[in-house]
Image 1 (cartoon, one colour):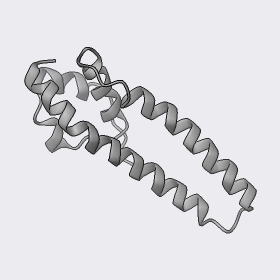
Image 2 (spheres, helix red, strand yellow):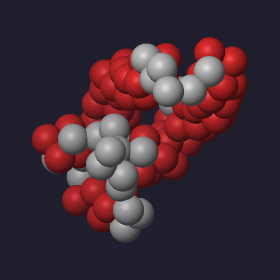
Image 3 (cartoon, rainbow, N blue to C red):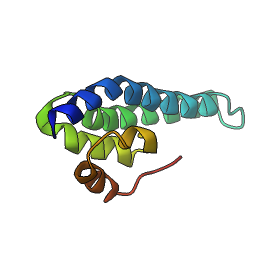
Length: 106
């Protein structure tokens, strides 16, 4: 990853982290408000989501290093956290690599 891309990656890192957390919190909020299931079942579902998403965020966002930034960008993008505008700030080579992996848009 070029120096200019690394700089952009670092600037957007907090944006992607916050976007990720917002998605998780929305999902948790939906479960917490579901009165069709017991409080215990809601708790268990929320705990499972947090456990799964904690591993996901650790892989995609934690341990910010230039040597792993491209791999992290692919992981962040595959989770649907990168906008087209944000991705446009990277080189065509980087975009081609990132876009070769499908992204979720949920």
